[in-house]
Amino acid sequence: MKRILCSALALLLALSLCACGESGGDTEPTYPAAFAGLEDRIDAAREEGRLTVCVSGDEPFLTAACEKFEELFGISVTVRTVEPDALPNSSGADVWYGGDEALCRTLSESGGLMRYTAAASADLNARGFDHGDYCAINSDALGIMVNDVVLARMGISAPRSWDDLLEPVYRELVWLPAYDTAEGRLFVRAMMEYFGDDAADYLTQLDTSVQFYTTGTDTAAKCLSTGECVIGIGWLSTGLTAQRNSGSSAIAMWAPAAEGVPGRVQTTAIFADAPHPNAAKLWQEFALSSQCMALMEDNGCSRFPTVWDGQETMPDIDPAQLELYGAETEETSAAVDEVIAQVMETLAENGVDTEDAARWHVA
Figure 1 (cartoon, rainbow, N blue to C red):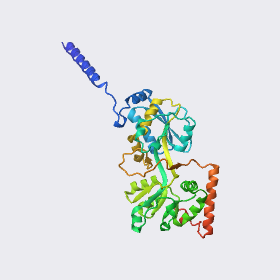
Figure 2: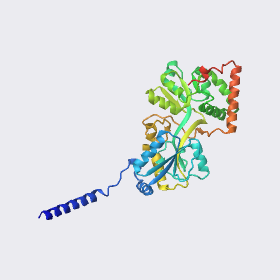
Figure 3: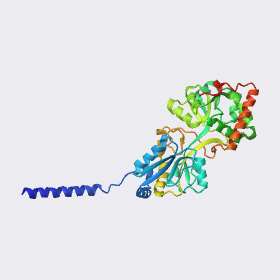
Figure 4: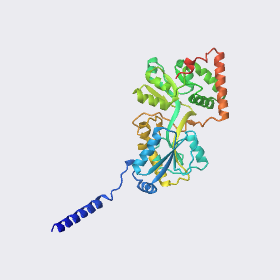
C-alpha cells in the first residue's frame, strides 16, 4: 500500500512540474520601449549570438555601452581597443564605436563601411549627423564660454563671434589656449581657415583681449565657474563638465556665429565585411538610443549627445557649421608654425613679454 501511495505521489509531482514548465517555458525576453518594433531584428541578432566592437580610445562610456548591449540582448560582445587617431583593423570585427568622424569618413570613401539606416536615426537632433553608412553619437565645438553673472555685473554683453573678441570692451578678459597646446594649434588652424592671409594679424590684435594663455584643456572652464575667468575659449564640453561639477548656472556657452567652427564628432558604424551583420545592425539601433546616450554622462563624458531628452540645456551645434580637422600633416604643421612665429615676432616687436610664463602658460 505504501509503495502504491509513493508511486502516486511521484506521478503527481512529475505532472505538476510539467505543468509549471508549460506555463513558464515560453516566456519571451522583454526589452526597453525604445526597441519596440525591432523584435525581428533582435531575434536575428540573438541567433548570431556574437558581436565584435572596435572602440576608439579608453573612455569609460565606450566599454560601458558594450556591457549594456550584452546585458540587454544576451549577445556576447568582444571589445577591441584602438588608438583614437588611427583606423581600426576591421578583420573579423563588426562595428566601430567612438571613431573620429574624419577617420570614419576616410573609411566610408574607400568602401569600408556597410550602409544601414537605423530606425533610431530619426531621433538625431540634426539630419547632418546621419551619413548613411555611419552616424554621429556626440559632437563638440571649440567655442566661446562666458560667466554671465560677471558680464552682467560689468554691464557687458557676451561676444557672439570671433570678430567680437577684438572689441575694446573685452580687453584682458579672454582666456585662450596656449599656442603650443593641441587646442591652441587647432584654434590657429581655424583662424587661418576663417581669416585667410589675415590670420596672423587677427591673432596679434586678439592678444590685447587675452588675459591668460592656458595649457590645461579645462583650465578656463573650471575658472569660469568661480568667476576668475570671464570669457574662455575651449571645448564646450569642458564648460558643461564645469557646470555639472560646480552646480553653477552662470556658465553660458555656444559655437560662434561663423562658418568653420573647430569641431569634433564621434561616430558609430558597421564594417562592410561584418561577420555578424544582424547583431551589428542591432548595435546601430542601440548606439542611437536614449539608453546608450545616457551612458556618456553616467561615465563622465560631457560631449553633446546627438540624441537627448531635452531635460538639460545643450548648446545648439549645427553639424554644417563644424569644421572637422584631421591630424596635422607636415604641410599643415609648417603653416601653423609660420603663423604662430609671425604673431610672436610682432608681439615682441610691440613690447609684449612673450616669455612671461605667468601669462603664457597658465595651467
